[in-house]
Image (tube, rainbow, N blue to C red; front, side, top):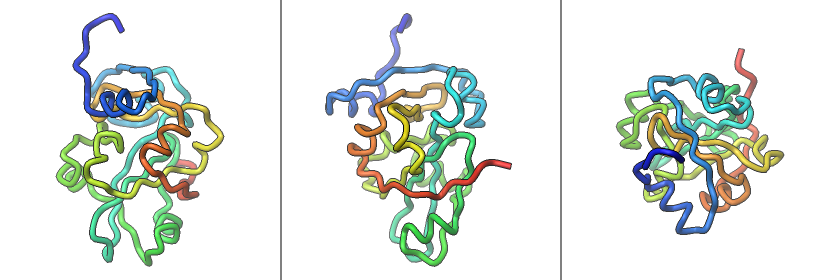
Length: 163
């Protein structure tokens, strides 16, 4: 890390739990997860985007983390949540609910909200995944098992290949 960078709450949380991480910076104008993966030099199946979903009967939203090259299967997510229906929050709603900008939404930056976090099961096969640090332009490479334990993730099979 050449330049001094402001430490984000996500980084402080990982450090407090003695979980090592690597910072990967990219042009913060990039909003597409697959392009972010390319910009930070990782394959899209190792870079995980975080989406905000809501069920009409649920009291609070949930976070869903899936590979950058996949899309959320709402029916399978609903089934995993024990709900009849789940909807993806619009960009505006996701920003309003999280207080973070789309492209910088991170489960690590939202632990204080105590939302349920669902992690696509494909992550189990990966030693590390790359996720948003909670700010556009910064990604963190973290050990998958440590991250899943810290966030209390529920593993789900709720992603399909992007078309």
